[in-house]
Length: 432
Length: 120
Figure (tube, chains in turn red, blue):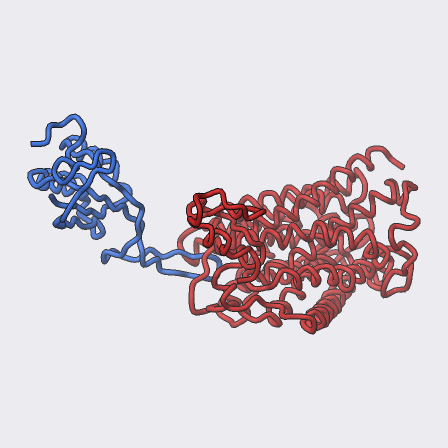
């Protein structure tokens, strides 16, 4: 065990955990104010539900020996996961670090179904998806599964995290259907400042995500760190120029989106490509996502916060460009197409296609299963009222006026008869 | 008594208030409102969504005045609120049936005369 590695990985784990509430703000700013808390809660709840599911079963399915397809149950409830070394850090810390990835991956999908999904079915989906879709794919790539044996390169989760989430988002948006009044009314972000704040915090946390994926305080971590700085910076520039060209104005939502797309794209490549290759990758990654986003808005696919365009398309571009730009001079293990190894691009493409198909089918099956037990969507009246009130019984921006205290023991403190009837008939926070 | 209702540009509010205070008009209510006054629509873009904003932010002033204060009040608003561009707003002068001051129960002209100024 190496003390420097332990110290860095403790820090990196905390950084990645911060990305999930950051994602809540990124997403929360993009929805209407009546759904702001619901959208934030979709990320925050993942910290609990996926975090515990990971410790109980997900970690075993992903990282226990098992077969080429899935880990076995030997690490269930963290059996045999203690303070012994896993690489150069404690096994338990390795488990926690990987858990933060499971949490944010599941939370990413929420962007496709905001403003209309009932919260109970959402929690069930989140938990089941992390166990049945995320954990097996993590096993394939990082747990010694078949993609690892084929030599697929995924430094920090372009395939495992972003492509799985993007494919799941596509299916979830289709199954849930578009929001009431989608494509008939304009849905505007209620707080662009939250979105920019979220993107900033995501970038900060992403240093733990990418540089931490070296699993050591090493030169490889330094390379991933610098690439995580340069690639999104370049995407931001290209996104700015595209915005300027299209509308004559540089938008805040565009800047936040460009940063996230750049981070997504560099994720699989972070420790495999040189810094100038990261600049090229970041710049190229802006184009497909930018135009996917414009195209999506003209379709009936209500992937409300463009998870497919940002994470699915960005992740795919990053995974493929990893197969082009990987450079043994920097990573010591594998070259890409540009450095005389065209086969790598083929392996990357195969990984992308299989993971998209698996995540899409798994997501469809889980949503259909949950739909057997109850509706996935809120009723149209609740959708109109907003899910903050219908699902959570609270408001992000409550105004105190007109709020009458409901006394727990219903003892009237007012003069006889006055207003008591109205006070006790105030509807509770449940479904309206 | 009259009720002067003015809709003005938000960015002109400070100047309008200053002009009103200089004209010794005290006692008014303002609220944030949105409206459409024939000005060009503002275009905004959010990712793939482009929207025309048909409503503009304005400020609405309500000023209850005695008859001889109507002209100075309106003149102050017209002078201070004007930019010459479409969207400067409107001033309406409405008849008022009754006015009460809640603190004292005073009525009509006494009720719209600021404290310290002899009603006359």
